[in-house]
Image (cartoon, rainbow, N blue to C red; front, side, top):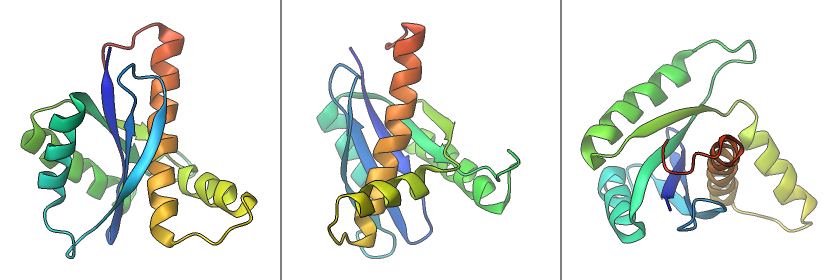
Length: 143
């Protein structure tokens, strides 16, 4: 079975999620604040070891037309660095509407949520999308 880490990359905050050991269910675990919380690569490396992760799924913010804009290019560069740092495969997943969906879900709960919660939930939604795709293919062992 396979555990994965999910990432919603942002310039100020990075939402982080993990899957269960079976690679079936994604859960938000928190937010990394760039420039405040130290090295994101170090934090993700520790998380990968602790969870026995076999891969990292990073949300890829394509434009509404499906094109790669400036932010998607930044995410691609981050993913390349992350793959080198963690020595794990990194997969980019189209995440065009994950942040809006996370905000909708949090708003529907009727509570006020810190901004970081939206980022962590968006990471979980991105990761869950990937896990569901793997399950539909019957291929939970690869990214």
